[in-house]
Amino acid sequence: MFIQSQILPRVRVVQGDITKLAVDAIVNAANESLLGGGGVDGAIHRAAGPELLAECRTLDGCRTGRAKVTKGYRLPAKFVLHTVGPVYADGRSGEPDLLRSCYRECLKLAAERSVESIAFPCISTGVYGYPKAAACAVAVDAVLEWLAGNDSPKTVTFCCFESGDAQLYRERLSQV
Ligand code: ADP
View 1 (cartoon, rainbow, N blue to C red):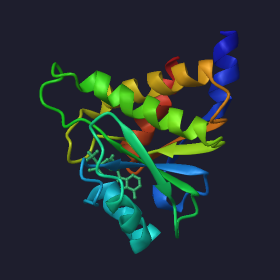
View 2 (view 1 turned 90 degrees about the vertical axis):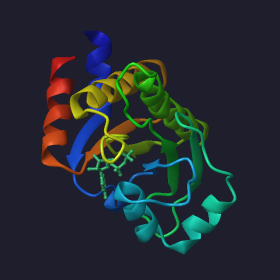
View 3 (view 1 turned 180 degrees about the vertical axis):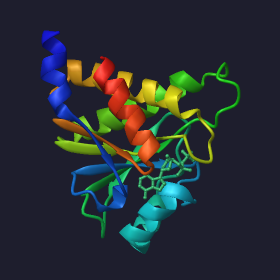
View 4 (view 1 turned 90 degrees about the horizontal axis):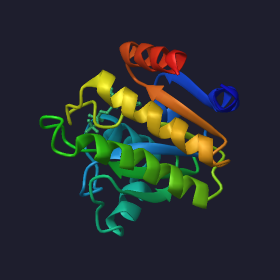
């Protein structure tokens, strides 16, 4: 109970476009090429400008469950943490572990750069097809576990594009 009262104030849920958030780092739900795509990836590249793609070209891609960092260029955010969520098959092909790893790897990279505020989209829940409630449970549990053991980042925002997702996150957080 004591631990949760310390951690929950460090977490917030917003509904909207992650490219508009004035946080230190935003997370991109990218694909393994890191060369841009649709959904949140396309929105981030459009808002950051062509310099982002130029830096991504130097990174040699990213494996599923891992993360790489770039600058934010024209975004309000200083950094973009590009992570590759799992494509959902049947839920028994390692998807939960890979999704958890995305959150942890981003938080680790953020902490290494002394990032104070970070925002996540709902990784894998668009074209990658991860069921939304199950993905929300993994995301919330991974973030709370990280915050319980680490002072950095200070705050984590779950940025939900769809109102139904924001509702799921609020419900999950109210249950912990
Ligand atoms: P994935 O390939 O990992 O499934 P998508 O981009 O297709 O990635 O979807 C991931 C999530 O990002 C979805 O919940 C989608 O609603 C959300 N999303 C799309 N555009 C934005 C945006 N501009 N800001 C925040 N979230 C977004």
